[in-house]
Length: 306
Image (cartoon, rainbow, N blue to C red):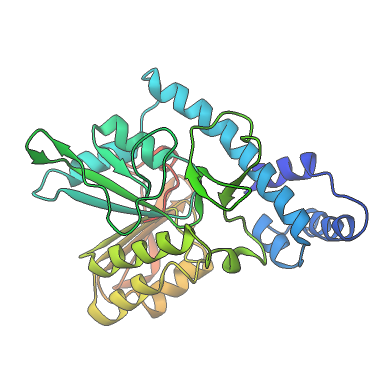
């Protein structure tokens, strides 16, 4: 989150009083080497400052997301996730689930490029209302279409709430729609409180169902730091020994703790180790270094979760 932290430092303009005091504490923590989430967790920021952080976070990520969409539309962007989805659909399965805490639309773009429909909890359209209790199903001709269902548990760049609290999904540009609030859950003390609200609550419930029915897990770039997301993974791996593969540039302490205490005996985890890769297996719980094969390129992985 280094780039985002710098963007917030450059663009947040707190009002005098509580906002200024809280923002000074956050900036000081960042200057002392804390990560963005650590710095925000240390300070109980007033709601007005949280709203500014959310808006500026949306702006920072939306700018990069729009540039990514333009490159994808021109055929100038390759998505490793597209390749993965195509491989996963070389089966009888008609549905693949992705659970992600990311706000960006990488999973949506990758699904489009791969040639599959995607669903994020909203009905099709331009001004998109929530699906509600009956999920929308897609068809190609007389047959059900292969669909990627994306559970965005921390919200999405194209989710908004109006002044009356009505939740919609809208096309977005570089500027926030007037009189709309972006529905994204930023790090900080309000993170877990916000996830009890809609549409986050429904997204988490849907993610729980998907994880509960999964026969295996692939986690890419996930740090195991979200206590409201991972309980189903932990339970299934610990109690049922469900296979799990974890890929990361650097495994977090929380991920290593999961491997040691809850991953069962059917796991493999990989992280970058200099010019090679460090692999963690049940028979090598401390990890072992291997040469970097040509087929692995951590730079090519879009940071997705699950």
